[in-house]
Every structure is written in C-alpha cells, then in structure tokens.
Image (cartoon, rainbow over all chains, first blue to last red; front, side, top):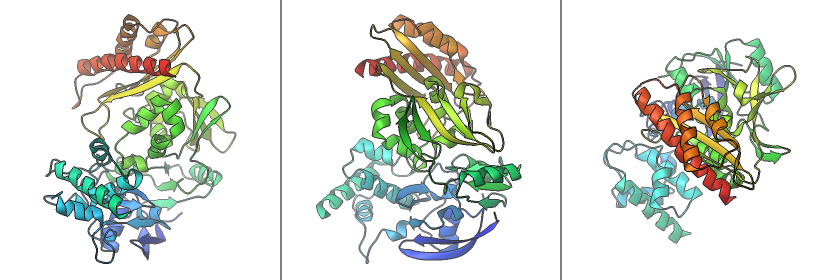
Length: 160
Length: 289
C-alpha cells in the first residue's frame, strides 16, 4: 500500500522499468515516461479511443488505466506495428485506402483494427464498424477506414 | 486530468482485500475501472486508497452449478460476449453485455463493477432484476447472498457494507421454455441509455407465461423492477394485447427525469415501446428453445 511503485512493463517487445506514482495513467507513462508519442490523448474519459493500445493481447483505452496496473504486462503501441522497417498490413491499408485525414485517431484506430482482425480475420463491414465503434474519427466518415481494414484482412489472409 | 494522489494496493487474496477495506474507511475497490477512474479524474470520487482486485485469482468464471449460472465478479463484458453458453442459453445477458459502452471498454469493464457501482444508467442491474438474480458478498464474517431486489438502495448506493466485496453474480439456471431480450435506445454507441428494458419470460407447455421479469434502466434513481407489469402478464398467454397492457404498466413504473436525452414523456413512451418489443422478442426466443 504505497503511493509510488516500481513497475516493469514490456512495451513493443522491450522491458521498461520505472518508479511511478499510483495516479500516473498508462497513457502518460507511455507518452511522457517512455516517449512513445504515437499514442494520443483525446477525450480523456474513455469515450474517443485515441489512446487505445494493446495490453496483454486486448485493446484497451490507456487513459482509463493506471500505469501500475500494467506492471508485469505487455503493451503494444502503434510504434510496435511495423516490423523490421516493413509496415504492418493495417498500416499499409490505411495508406493505400487513405483511411485518415488529420490522423489523430489513426494510431488507436489501427490498434483496434488489429485486435478485431485477431479475433475475427474475416469480418463483414458491419462487424468492422462495430469493432471500431469505440474509436471516434471526426474527419473521414469511416468509409475509407472500413476499406483500410478490409485491405488489411485480405493482405493478412494472403500472407498466412 | 490527473486524479488527486492516492495509495494503491493490489492484494493477491480476497481476505487481504476485505481486511484493507476494513482498515481504510476511504478505500474503494478497483475492478475494470471504467466508471471509477473517470470519476476520480473529474474529482467526483476521491478515494484515499484504491484496492485493485484484478490480481486476485478465481474471480473470473462463467459456469452453471446447481440451480444457478454463476459469474465471477471480475468477468469482463467481452468474456460474457464471447461465451457460447451465454449466447445459447442466456440471450438477455448476451444482449446486455454487448450494449455496454463500446467493444474496447468491454475488454476491461466487469459485470461485478457494473453492479456494485450502482449507477442507475448501468445496464446489468435491470437485467439482473428481470432474471431474479442474487449477488454474493464476501466480508470479514460469513459470505452472504443478497437478492438483487434488495441490492440497489439509491443512486450509487447498494446493500454492500463498506468492508464487503461483491464476488459473484447468480442468475437462475436456464430452464426449457425461457427467453429474454435487452433493448436500449442510446444516442450513439457508448452513451448511457436514454431508456432501456430487460425482459425475461418462461412459457409452460401450453404457452402460458409462468415467469415474467421486467427491469428498467436509467428511468429513475435506481434500476426499476416493473412488478405490476410482470404480475399482469404472469399466468396469461403472451398475446399482443397482454403484452401491450404490461408495457403500459411498465411505463407507469418508470420515474424518468428530463435531461439532454429527452423529456419525461418521451422516456416513458420509450419504456412502453421497448417493453413491447423486448417482450415479443423474449417470447419468440422462449418458443425457439
């Protein structure tokens, strides 16, 4: 029972250790302690999904979780998507289908898309829209985002 | 916004969690955190100590045992949504879990938290009222089962003592001829209900309603059990007239207040329409298995 804690979190394949206050939110740990600024802060209240990251294999809103809760866990942010300089199929999909305009929601959107495709590699348009309904985009009207996810689903199928 | 400073403990056992609660009058239990953490950020809740029960093993399960479907309090909404057992036999619960917040929130939000937080806008409470469920509370003395009808005392107030932890939800085990449905009107995905209705029925061999459960969400300071509506339909065949009569009584039981989501009249009218539709669907599902 303390107000500061020593935590170890694996982020994008690398273990990071830090002393954190109880009240430090995971999103601030990721952005300000580890400098992975691809994870964004939007609404600050678990509505918009800009801060979505993978935690232990599930997509979560990192603004509504304390860093200490991730102690011992595995986090993947948008920076962890590309491997060896090669874009992840979802990144390629957003690029090819122009799935973004301002780009603010994009990191969270891509993490949720990856989580969706992991659970359901062959989603219908409706399932894609439902799977991304916790991530808000104020620019695109979602049409090209859906196309980007469809692109990634095809690509991942052909690769596997 | 960052919450004010607090202490944090992540006990490994329920006994430790209960002891910490007993020692700290300003402590709060942290489950999925998707209600509590935003409240802390807005300074609506300022616990001096958070007792994180996410690291206690054995609080996450879904199983049928004796006369109950038992669900561990830390079971995530996503796990309920993914459960084949719940999809096949407990459609009212499956509908409800799917309507909570959004799919990302569902990965952390827990059924126990949804109940213990006792926000009248939360969805599981009405569903548990419709099912006639119980919850199990573990404290420093003997565990106790609390009928859900005795659980909600007011907005954000429950029958739990400060040093009790809600550990299990018990829903009457599926019987042949049962069906249910949860219908919610929300302005957008993730919003609280403007109004929502949980309906559960069981038909006997002649098609007569031998059980009717109706719970209403976010149309009062607590979730509301529409008892008069239930009684009106019980013992009758679920004809359209009988369903409409029950829905009228459900709308009378609602105690909505006007807000950004609508006027009192609008919400009452929603309750009526949603009750008709939820009962029809519950009956259709009951007949289908």
